[in-house]
Image 1 (cartoon, rainbow, N blue to C red):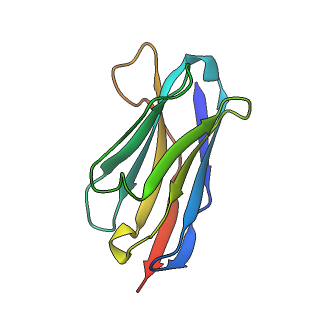
Image 2 (image 1 turned 180 degrees about the vertical axis):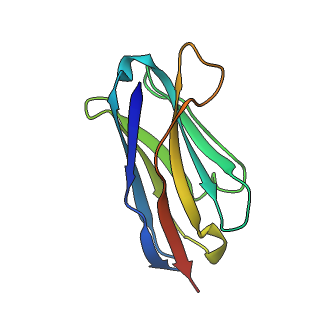
Length: 120
């Protein structure tokens, strides 16, 4: 099992920045990738970005955020990060991190989510 705990959400004005953290514990040796998702109130969960875990870290992004969001990691801390710049009211959502283990085709482990609210 892998446990994930997100932090760093909050209220920010449009144009501001936040950095989300996702701390992993448990059987972290299983992890091959970490992803970030968000779900606005009443909306669907959307994949935002991912980073490979066992190498230097190859990042990928959905087009709508790739110029504003940056995913990174610190394997020594078993933590992934999502730096979000130039935030917009449409970015308001609950943000989740998720871990994909080697023996599973998708994201098996999920954090509890952290609320990000962007005011206009």
